[in-house]
Structures are given as structure tokens and as C-alpha cells.
Length: 458
Image (cartoon, rainbow, N blue to C red; front, top):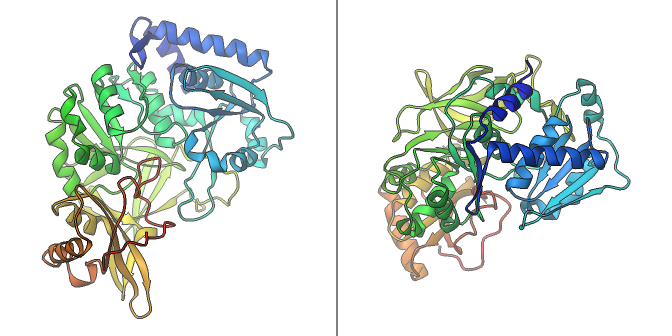
């Protein structure tokens, strides 16, 4: 039986179990699948069916979640978007060749419209012969032009065929992020419940955990650090959380060490995935360790010159607007530098983030961990800046918990780093920035493309 059909049939068998929690409103699987059926009727009325390319604009909610399953049933191609890509929306829709646009607003009301003058993307045109549901997500474009990624959802769903325990999952990662869509599918495929959040502020996430009795929090190291610094968690009961998964960027050791204070009952698990490859199975050496074993059924890994390569059965169909990144044998270079210890690896950082100081390699996460151990530092982002002799030097952006004179910050942090780092790793400049200025809407550090504010500590 096809993977999609297997998962949908299993969902029908969960009947009275809670399927989704949104703002305190909880729907059973029976009620949720009625929403899916309502959407299938509505899609048919608008002429949306097999092979239709449909943009979905909104956030995770009962209606958007039901709509995605209706599109999967109809074998359409879903193209999710959130407000995070508003400035690039028209260009992304053109790249994907979107035929229909469905907007779901904050009140969960929706509008459907046909897109005039769309042009079918060549890769999608070829994919139609597969007669399978599809998914298009876009890369962030942090190192160049954003790329549209086409997935065969039948292949993505194969990961969920073997039944596993269900979780009450916070839908933290955005729905137009492959990791977010993977969390969404996993929440329903195993008979768990999807817990929607009003927004992704620390307070809103804590409120959703308490209200929805969430057991799983999939998130990012940047958000965990912001949650720790905010102290708002002290006002909520977060004892229901049994698992925290983190990925998308390197976790500073200083942040990992603090997590258990907030979530004493939770296992901490590092995950690994790329939009082009899917999300791999992973096993952390321990809750307190950054060493992780990745792979599992359908995935192969290898290390070439300290860089991770992956081959996956769930590989994307291809880029909509760029050449394929896979070699002749289906392997993809991830660009992640790793250290190895038996079957475990530790991800040091992306090749694109590496700072080359006179031939010496500096990975930002190592320096960020040291900075986060210093008093009064809420957030730290380390990156490279040009230098006429050394090629590059290490620079740092800092957000403070309490106001502090610029001279004091520089002197104190430089002395702190000198005691713990080799000289070439010590930032030569510290720039104080406002809280929240160091990460994207996806709660991932932004290391490039942002000019330092005029107020510098040097």
C-alpha cells in the first residue's frame, strides 16, 4: 500500500483521539478528518486536483493543517508560505508556477483564487507524470539566490509508515520550512496532537506548552537561548515536555548546559536534516552531549575531508531554479564540517560560516559558547570580517541583559575570551545590538548580510 494511503487510513482509525489544539480549541481525529473532507469538496469546486500547484499562505491552524492533507489526498502540489517571505512572495510564486492561491487568515477564515498568467515550471511539468502529491519549499538564500525545492510527498511519507508513539507536538518550526512540515506530518501520522502557537515569542510558546500539555518541543538553539534569557518560563508549567529536539544550526555548549533547568523532565535530542534530503533519524550520545549518530533506514552518510555527505531515499526531486547538487551516485555534500568519534559525529559548523584568520580555522559556535558564559550576555553571534593582512578576523554582535557602558563591555568580554580561547579566535570588535536583531523570523542566527550598527565597541 502506498505510504500516503497507509498514513491517511491510520489517521482515520484514531477517531476520538485529540488531533489538534489551537488556542484551547481541541479537535478529535474524526472532527479533523471532516475538515479535510470539507476541503476536498471545496478544492473540487474550484477545479483544484491532481497536479494543481497551490500556494497556501498562513500559519499552522486547524484549517491549514486540514488543507494540507486535502491537497495530499488530491495529489496536488502544495507550496506553503508564511509572512516571513512576504517581500519575496511574488517571485517565489512565479518560480513555482503557482496556479491557485489559498490565504488562511489569523481567524482561520480562507479565500481561494486562481492565479492569472501562471507559467508551469519545467521540473514540475515532468513530475506530473508520477501522479504523486508534491511539496515545494524554498531555501533561505543566506548564501545566494533562494532555491525552490520540489519533493515527492509519497517518498517523504515513507518515513512515517512504521507506527511509532505519538507526541503532543508544538508546531514551532514554520510550515514553509521542511523541518516544520516534517513535524506537522509526524504529529498526525503517529496519532499524536498538533499544538498550534499564537506566535513564536518565548511567552506564547510557554503558554501553548502549558495549555496544550505538549510533550514535544521541536525548536532551534537560538530560540532555546532566547527562552533561557527571557525568564518568562518561570511563570508557566512546562513539566509536560518529555522531549526537546533541536537542529538547523550548531548548539552552543553553554546553551545546552542550561536547558535542563527549565525542562527537568525532558530528553534533549539533536536532529539533522536538509531541505534537499529530508530529516534523518538521529541519536544523541547523551542529553548533555553534542555528539550525535545520524542515518537510519533510507539514509546513508559518509565523511570526506571532514565534511559530511548524505544519500537519501527521500531526496528531493530537484531544484526548480538551479542545477542538481547530487553527484552521479546520488550523494550530496552538506557543507557541514564534522569531527568523528566511532559512530558518532560532532558538527562544528557550515563551511560557509567558517572564519579563516591567516590560515587558521575558527568555527563561530566555539566562540559563541564562550561569550554566552560571560555575565550579562543574552545573545551572541560571531562572524568573519575582512582584514588586509589576515584575510579575515573574528567579529561579534552582542545583546545585553542590562545596559552597560560600551568600554566596559569590550574590556570585560575581551578579557573573558583571552582566558578561554587562542588569540586568533578572540573577537577584535564587539558590536552591541538590540535584542532580536541577531536572528531571522525562523529563529536562526543571521551571520551574513547585516551591516553592524554605528554604535561599536572596539
